[in-house]
Image (cartoon, rainbow, N blue to C red; front, side, top):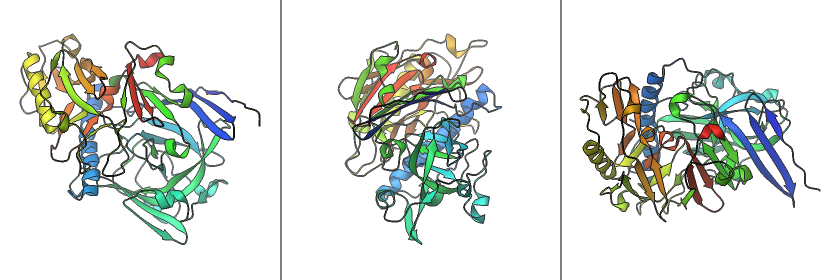
Length: 448
């Protein structure tokens, strides 16, 4: 068959898709604009920042609980339940034939693609969401996956079983829980487009927690169930616009995911994506080896940021966390350096229920955070790559007169360090899945 391509531009999603058939392979290159987590929210900017910080703390607890549970170190019983969509950028697409438009949270820390479905009376009581439940009975392309399917055989879940040759699963997100049945369906990228792709997904319900403005999750992790793995996408990138601005952000797949194609305000730098040697996980680990504040290298041993022999610890890049989290030793070093550098009064009682920051400063009367000069926080990676974070990528202003460090602490004994989406804002980041490389470049995301 002769090579051909199709280009579709949709004003609703600003989504561009190119599909090339060559040598019997389907190469998928496309761009989509991600919805901001709070795009349709009536919350003020201050409340959005506060709300996201609280949700970020709950997500970090969920991530650590999932890893600790695999290691047998911790029960998830006391992990806080927060809406899974509170920090996640999302993508609107069509599911089924004809397409039913639904919004899925795009998550680099999950592999299962799933949406809440109306399969039976039980799913009528699924977690509340603003969108209607997906209706399999209205789709001519819906089919249950048999237990012999490789996604059922090789997919990793908290629990799964075979009932009437249907693959039933149960998945935990900390103490939030999603269960359902694996199925195959046609996913249409753009409600009005004719380009549709078959994917295995979970059709079920979120039985704890909530999704708010979304209907489910679109996993982009290295796991076998993710969009990236199922479509053999070699690489993808995204560029998150400033969190406080609530604008859409570009997500690019395949050949479109090329940092050198777009104007950057700095050098493209690359480090490795590393695997957890002790277990298969749904996270992209990167070899963070140290930190600096300005030109001062902090006293942070690389071992505190790396993956431990038992699989605990390590550093992940996560699209679903707002704030950064560092292993306790590294966090203490950052906090000490910030206190020595920022000459402002420290606010007492930052553990008040309204705030989920571990360090805040009182701004002078009438002065906004934008007028405060701080040295960049630099993340050093193995191989020499350095991610330079300006003030707005590691501080937030949750209310007028208050400037808070958007970095928290993870337990030293097993906790994972997290590079969140505030750290990634106006940073074009690329996951070269095929070659196990992570690249980044400072970029004005609005210009892509």
